Length: 217
Image (cartoon, rainbow, N blue to C red; front, side):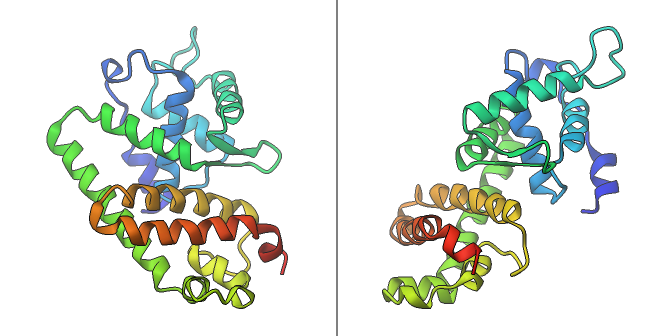
């Protein structure tokens, strides 16, 4: 989906659906929506997506037709303190950690009260978790890891695993790593895929441990 279509199709949730939810929890959903549709999670984009999805929570008190950027700023700071997101205002991009993604997914399930919509989303996440986990097992880096050929694992293997080009910046790599980690952890819940998911998690842990060396090759 292109960015113009994404913004045009955004619809606000019913205020009753998110009554009682904290601002920082809703912020995670906004970032998750941007990530899912491959829209850069910049400060401005986060401000707009939160205002469009949750206008009752992220609008100015006296001018409800405009977003309250101060609330967004405070929410992002809270999420960073709780290690739910990564990113800096100076770099202009924020990403969810694995924990942040999990919380966002759980909240989205709660917001979608319609059982059919909830089932569709759950089934979609299940298929995506299995697909992404299987794809890692087909990479050369994973195969070398399982064969203990650690010296053969290079930056290319890190990028291949994370579906990034060799020239991708570190923010992009970290974002994809957090998302992949979340989906592989989700896949581990399914008994049929629990063993292979653990193998992939071991490989991801190896990549994280050797991150600096691999990224700077």
